[in-house]
Amino acid sequence: MAQRDLIIHINGWPGVGKLTIARELAGLMGARLLDNHTIINPAEALFERRDPLYRSLRQALRTTILAHVAQMKPGVLILTDAISDDAFDSAVFEDYRELAKNRGAELVAVVLDCAPEINAQRLMAAGRAERRKLTDPAVLASLRASHRLLRAQGVPLIELDVGPLSPSEAATILAGCCRDLVESAYQLAESMRELGTPEP
Image 1 (cartoon, rainbow, N blue to C red):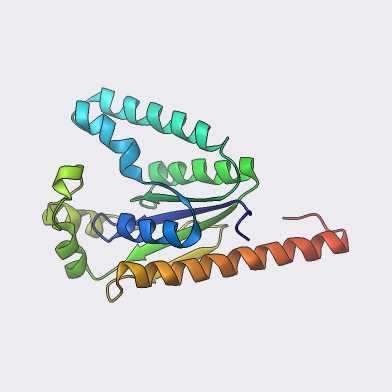
Image 2: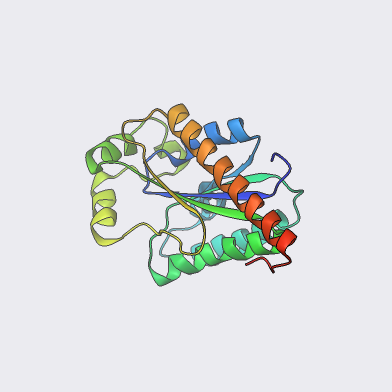
């Protein structure tokens, strides 16, 4: 199991606890973690979001990072994101689907959510501003009102309400679900090979 190639994509609103939970999950699964702010922050450090150079730098960094990720040794990789189900963000997820295909990896989509009031409370946690993360509850409320988190089709999907859970509890649940999904996919592939049926 530990040697199988697995990509876990964690999606959720800003402030829901993605990075904290992802760090716990990475520890449990011996995974590499690529947080979306690793890509976003260099662009934000240099340019305003309205500046065309912001978008071009962010895309260039993302393309370069994913090209290198494609060459990593097999293992577990965790990605974090805050993407909606609109056309632009859906295309972002397609890059991860392509990455998994190129690596021959299982791809699991995780959506984390919690009640809006809990989300707003967590959004203002200490240290978020210093890491260039969103801290304005009004912006969060607008995002939640006008967008819907992407729930990717065609891949295993885990949805978890993290409101009542500690980061370690959430990570433990996710680790168990991911291991079960990968094991099921492995057993299905083995059965299809024994029957001489092409894998989907």
